[in-house]
Image (cartoon, rainbow, N blue to C red):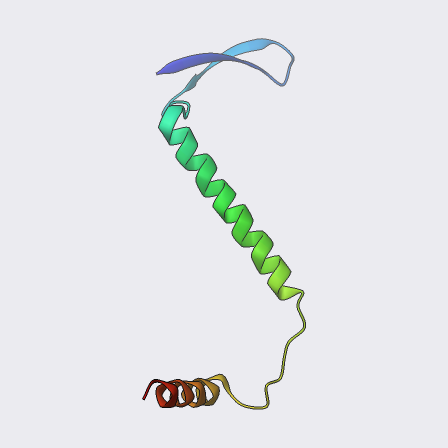
Length: 78
């Protein structure tokens, strides 16, 4: 168990037991954590950017449009 000095509410120094504290993150683990944070920030920025774009009404639902495009592509390949 680790003992660390902390300031008490009465401004006197008291020693309290602190158990199960994780070890500091260093080396490759720190790099992995920082990379994950950077990816999440990039994803958050992209979602924020995407949410600010105006919606587009294509006049047709996406499934029908996809079928139409696939048929056109198949016709070009034949």
